[in-house]
Image (cartoon, rainbow, N blue to C red; front, side):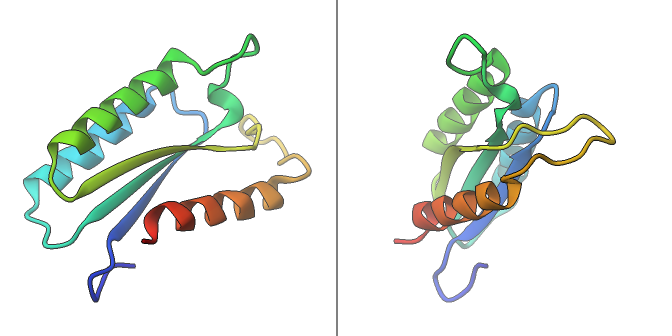
Length: 117
C-alpha cells in the first residue's frame, strides 16, 4: 500500500488471458494519464499457462513483457517486473491442483522482495 514514501504496488495476475499485453498497456496508459505523486511498481504475474512445452515462454507473454519493460523505461517513477506463478491454471470449472497455496506464498514473497528497498 502506498503512503509515507512507499511505492504504489500493482499486481496483475495473468491466469489464461488471450492477450496479456493488453492489460499492461491499459495499466500504463492510466498511469501516464494520471499525475501520480508516488512511485509505482507493477508486477505482472504469469501462470504456467504461458510456458511452452519445448521451453521458454509464449509470444503472448514475451509481448507483454516487452511492452511492460519499454513503457516502464519511458515513464518516470514506474518499474515493471514479470514473475511466474508456478501454477497450471484449471480451465473454467476445473479444480485447482495441489500445491497452489505454496505457489501463491512463494510469489507473494518474490513480489515483496522486488518492491521493497
